[in-house]
Amino acid sequence: MNDLKLEDIAKLAGVSRSTVSRVVNASPNVDAATRKKVEKVIQSTGYQPNAAARSLASQRTNMIGLVIPRTTSAFFTDPYFPQLTQGVAFACNNHHLTLSLFLVGNQEDENEITPRLLRRGMLDGILLQSGNSDDMLFRRLISSQMPLLVLGRPFEEKSVNYIDVDNVSAAKNATSHLIKLGYQRIGMITGAIHSTTSIDRQAGFKQAMAEAGREIDPALIAEGDFSENSGYIAMKKLLPFKPDAIFAQSDVMAIGAMRAVQEAGLEIPKDVAFVGFDDLPVASTLPIKLTTIHQPITHFGIKAVDLLLDMIEKGTKPAKRMILDTELIIRDTCGANFIRRTTVEGAKMEGSALKALL
Image 1 (cartoon, rainbow, N blue to C red):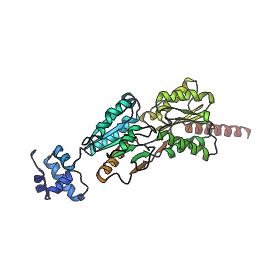
Image 2: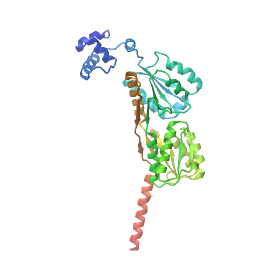
Image 3: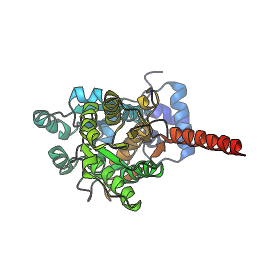
Image 4: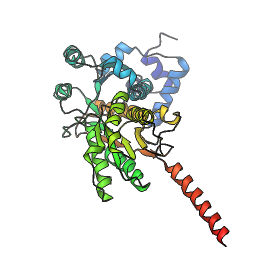
């Protein structure tokens, strides 16, 4: 039955040819019962729609682009991006879309890739990992008519469609946790200062400190670039100023910073406590498990595709925004368990001493 046509499916399902066409092309203008009936016939007959004909009829390529401004090596060494891509790819499979990945590591890449991205009939829409103040690729894409969804809050929010997590509240939550645990010299390792992600997480850190009546010591702030080595170097700079706790704006930087602390002969969390950001799989498998902010990276990728498809089908105005929640995951590096343990042990010792006196 491989030579079945739309008319055959329509006859078997007891509907019109145009209704079958709408179901095949995922049009929203079909009621649920009719859609289910048509899909049941398609499944039972093994009918395979002609992809080229579908694209021609709908004037869509059923292909979207994921553009990440990173070199190939940076993409594969930072666990965040493969996890994000996994979510995007999963959603594309569910929606029967083809995903094209574009890595833009330098100006030469940008000049070569941008015309391909904007070529008519190439893509239905673009997901762009962005958020840098000097991002010329963002400016070139936003000025086109291509449906564009930015992954991360862009500097220019007006009329821009984007999806992000609540970085300000998340960073505030992480810092407040360290404050509540009694740490006095709380430092921070930032991401690249020109990224909105880093700017928002710094804002959350400052809010938590201000609300607790704490002054921020500039000597306890060091810049990284979200890489492990930058976290290591930043921590080396901070150690002479004796921080007792660090909020690192990514798990990867936290791991580098923890290595620097251990090389200095200090203990985690006894001497320096840590809270990271991302909740990458490695965070729960470290010898000293990392307390961190969980952001739903894979789910983020799935929701991004759903939002982009909504833009493609319904238009990009008004601008669409989606902000996802985060969660503080308490493990070993923040010292919460260490503090509870020492407090209980101290209470037991005091109780024993009191009994001895009596």
